[in-house]
Amino acid sequence: MSKKIFEHKIMPVTQKMYRYAFSILKDSDLANDVVQDCLLKIWEKRKILPKIKSYDSWAMRITRNQCYDWVKTNRYTIGDEALVNVSNTEETDFESILKDSKLWLDKIMDSLSQKNREIFHLREVEEMTYQEIAEIMSLSLSDVKVSVHRTRQKIKSSFQKIEGYGIAN
Image (cartoon, rainbow, N blue to C red):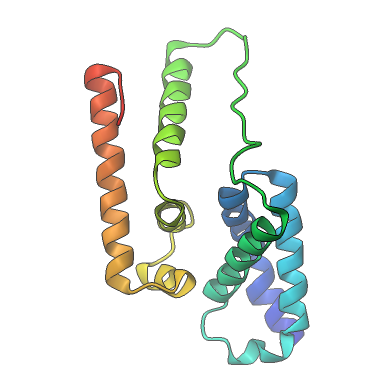
């Protein structure tokens, strides 16, 4: 029974686990390693799988904890190795605007607290419910909703400033 649950409930969320780990660690290889460690931990705890209510939330919480354990033990500064690689190829105006918008969004996201970045990522990228995020982050439902609202407002106002004046913050 546990093997079936692992194969049908946990394995399908490995890409979601990877994206979440990558959003925290900003390193593809490291995110893959963390996900593998998470899968190993989950496999070692496979006997309790039938008791788990939400497999997605449980797997994501393990991923989050594993990322922070890695950061803590390796004294790794999140984002230090994530550099923007700008190519010298010709590009259309649309591609240029899109690239600039992405760079601004990354800058705005970097100005947010780690907690708000995580909550926003889980909501907007992973499309998780507020309740699932609250369970993963050990927060109240209202805290999650407020955080998402404030983050959206900050992103919106920052982009309005950029469009109006060419500056943010």
